[in-house]
Length: 449
Image (tube, rainbow, N blue to C red; front, side, top):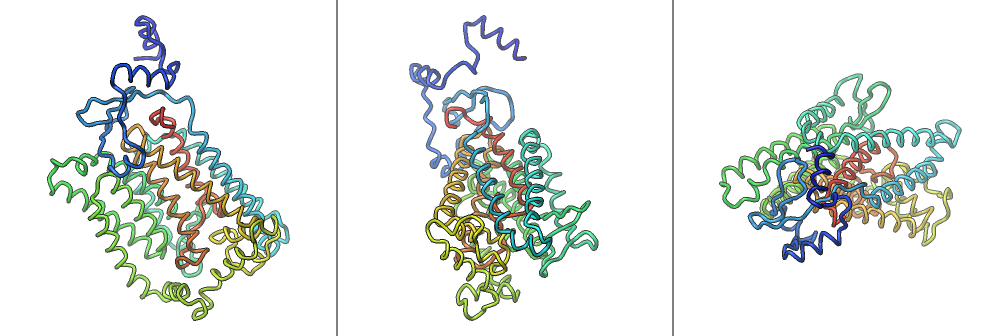
C-alpha cells in the first residue's frame, strides 16, 4: 500500500497519520484499553538473551510482537531522525582525536618532513575516508548488509590472506598485517572485525529460535554451535599467522558475546572462554616477544626493553596532573613514548589535558556504549539487534584493551583507541559501523530512544 492510499484510508476512518501521534497519546490509549506494554528493562532484556522473539523479517509492519503467544504489542513510529545524541558523541570523539593526533604527531612531522603540518594532511585523509564510510553505510542500510553478509565475510577473509602475497602485503616489526592497494595502505583485520559482526548477526537472525526455543532438539543446537566454532577456529588461524593476537581476541569476544545474547547458555560460554585462555598459554610461551611482554608486565625492571612504552606512558599520565600541561606541551611525544599518535595516544591526552581530558574520553565512550546497548535492546528485528550489540561490544572491548595497555594492567597488545588514534583503516571501519548503528537507531522502537 502506498503512502497516499494509507493516508486516504486514515482520513476515511478518522485516524491521524502515525507521525502526528505523540508518544503520550499512544501510551494513554493503550492504558485505557488495558493493553499497556509490559516490556522488561534494558538490562533484563539483555540477560534474557532475546527470548522475547521479534518478527524475523524486515517488513514494513507497524507493530512488533514482544511476548511469544502473549498478544502484547507495542506500536512503532517511523522516526524522523537518527539518534542525534549518539551522533554528537561520535563527532566529539573524532574532533578530540584529530586535535590530539596533530598535537602528538608534532615530533614525527618535524622528523619526517620538517613541517608540523604532516599529520594535518594525514588526518584530513582519514577523516574523509571516515565520512565516506559513515554516510555510505547509513545510506546502504543494514537490511542490504543482511543480504550480502556471506560475500562480505568471504572478501574480508581473502583480504586477510593478501598480507602474505609478495608485492601486496606489508611487513613491519615482524608482523604482516597490512596490504597496499592503489597506493593506499589497508589493515584487513579491521575489515574482518566488521564483516564478522555482520555475518554472525545475519546467521543468528535465522538460528535464534534454535537457541531460544526449549523444544528444539539438542542435536540442532549442537550442529548450529559447531558451525560457529569452525568460524572461530578459521578466524583465529588466519590472524595468529600474521601474527595479530589482539585482533583475534577481540573478534572472538564479539562472536561469543553475540552468541550469548542469542541464547547460548552461560555454561557453554564459560567453556569456550576457558578453552581460549588455555590456548593462550602455548601462543604466549612459544613466541619470544609475547613472553617478554608478559614478563615485563610482572616485573618491568627484568625486561626493560619490553616495558619501555608502558613506563613512559605512566610518566605521561603522572606528569599531566589534574589539568595537564596544556595542549601541545607534551614532553613524552618527543621520542620518549613510541607510537604517540596510535596505541599510546591516551597518555599524551593525560599529559596535555590532564585528568579532566582523560575523564572526558571515558565519559564519551561510556555514553556511546550505553546508547549502543539501548539501541540493541530495542531494535526492530533480531539481526539489527545482534549487529548493534556486536558493534557496541567491539568498540567497548577495544577501548578497555587500549586503556588496560597504557595503564600497565595488561600486556602491550597493539590495540588502537577507537575514533581517537590515527589510522585511515580504523577510522573508516569505525565510522562505517556508526553509520549502520545510526540507521538501526532510526528504525528502533520509538518510545525508548
